[in-house]
Structure formats: structure tokens, C-alpha cells
Amino acid sequence: MPDSDRLQGALRKAIAAFLGFMLSFVLLVALLITGFYLLVNAATLALTPLLGGAGAMAVTGLSCLLLLFLFFYRMTRPLPSKQSEGSGDGDSSGSPFGAVKRLIQKNPLEAALAAFALGVVEQGDPRLKSMLMQGGMALAKEAERQQRGDDGEGGGPEAANDAADR
Image 1 (cartoon, rainbow, N blue to C red):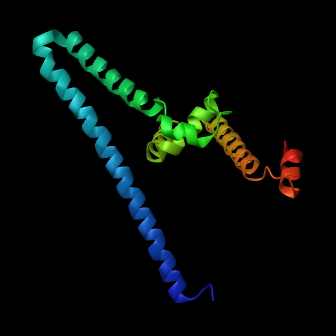
Image 2 (image 1 turned 135 degrees about the vertical axis):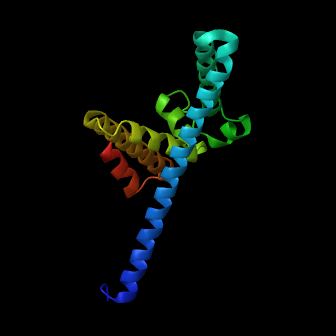
Image 3 (image 1 turned 90 degrees about the vertical axis):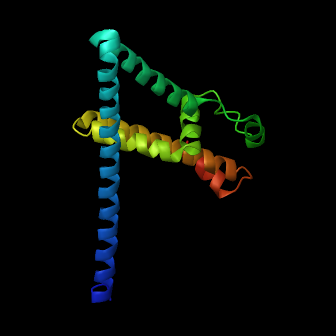
């Protein structure tokens, strides 16, 4: 019964809801970016009589860089000690891939927004897109291998398949 009117109506509603959500999300992001741009422009204009044009741009630019620094500092600060003791993942603590993996696991919304922004900004370069896809696939495969390695250490066919995959 895949061609029934009820199923087609439900599918149309689901697609319309998804498209409506995506359009509202894009509109929200565009409004936030435009608002931030206008706020920086207003700060520059307000500081111009006090500091001059170059000074006002320097102050607003440094304040934007400070906000970026604080954001990335917050995203990359170490985990609390009680979680790091209980996890038992000592092998990936020093690798950059482990740090990125933990960062994405602890901040999934921010990671998704950063990936969305990167996709919007760099959608015209096919080489960068290909490189990002390859890197993402490699990270996903490595995470899957680590999960299977942690879950199936008791031996058996799964451990033999893992050893054959490596």
C-alpha cells in the first residue's frame, strides 16, 4: 500500500514540516548574523567620535577576537576530574582526534552549528568538501572501531573480525 492517499499525505506533511523547520532555522541564523553585524557596526560608529575611525575599528575588532577566544577556550577546556577518572579512555587523551571527539560529544549542538556554518561558507570549493568528507568518514570509522574494541574484548567472532579489519 505504498501509493495510498493517506501515506502520500503524511509524507507530504512530513516533508513540508522539515522544509519549514529548515527555512525557519536558516532565517534565524541569517537574522542572528545580520544582528551581530549591525551591532558591531553600531559600536564602531559610536566609538568613532571618541577614538577616531581607526581606533574604533581596532577596539571593536579586538572585542570580537576576545569573544572568539573566550568561546573557543570554553569549548576546549578540560573535562571535570570525576568524569575523566570513571571513563577509562586513557589511550585517546593526548591525541587531537580524541580531543575533537570528546569536544563534539560534550557539545553536539555547537558542533552541528559549526559544521553548518562551515558548509554554508565553503560550499563552493569541491576540494575542501571532499577533504572534509574523507576526514569525517575516517573519524567515524575510528570511533566505530574503538567502540567495537571496547565492547568485544572478551574474544569470539567479533574480536576476530575487528583484528581482521585492522
